[in-house]
Length: 207
Image (cartoon, rainbow, N blue to C red; front, side, top):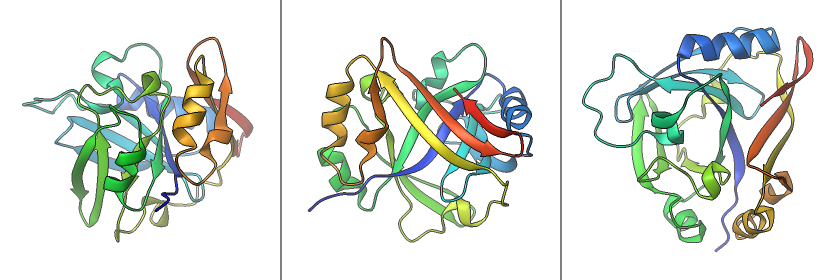
């Protein structure tokens, strides 16, 4: 049975949530919506709807305690200015998707906030395959998707590209799924990603 991958959201990592929020809001000319905390991972976030996908700004929650596992998206080792670091793909049927995914994509973790419930693959070391270039996998099941509740920011994802020195290997990993996400991959000297967003400030590159 084939599994379809669809871009669910893009991840901007930062050392401080306020700093990351200011980075996105200043670039796009909008106000981000509140997110919440992830007690299991010791992180917190803010969100911005981009139509049927969304942008997540995420950082280590300084009020979190008792962290016992590596945080997702390599946040334990993150430093520097806020930047686009990861992408997450939506699936229906996470166990089957993980059978097709490269080793190290992670194991399912069930999380919730209010009446939002989701299953997400979390890697043991916090690093996704291909040095973070392979997308994280998330399954919202019957839960409402966050974009259904986010205010319309007037922003839309215009284009998205992942560059990687092993673009052919990343293409092959993504081609095991339906959905055409391998079209977002290009050859590059080092791993980098960039999103172009249509916003009140015009077309803006977030990278």
